[in-house]
Length: 169
Image 1 (cartoon, rainbow, N blue to C red):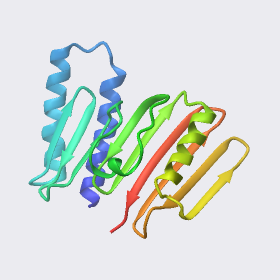
Image 2 (cartoon, helix red, strand yellow; image 1 turned 60 degrees about the vertical axis):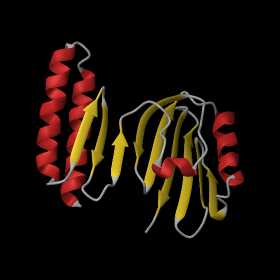
Image 3 (cartoon, rainbow, N blue to C red; image 1 turned 180 degrees about the vertical axis):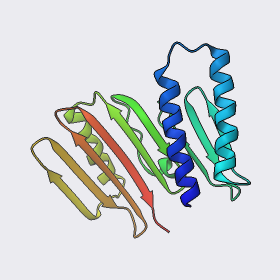
């Protein structure tokens, strides 16, 4: 597990460095992606498949578990299927697997974030719920059942919105 976490952190660092250099030619990007995939697969261990394309990365373990991140589109499959799609703002980061999903957005209006939190409640994420309003932050989380929790955090001043769902084992 520690090796996979190190691999994921390394992937994030590499992805950020690749995306920061918009001047690179396509050929150099493809070579960098393939080299990165090879190195990360060695670090992650046998049976791990890492695929990097256009700033998006998918890691698939030998147990069939898949984690994807880096996309700017609403995720499909896995834990993301448990929460309603948020169609406002700009997606800046997505991490999705069978057990968890996190979507980070910018340029989200407060009313849209509040409506989404109500959508989470309508979907049944109301057990052991907690809702907090601080000076510039709105936080909500609630359980669908004893294993499935969804939450949302909105930064009023920065217009940043984070949506997540987690399924515990």
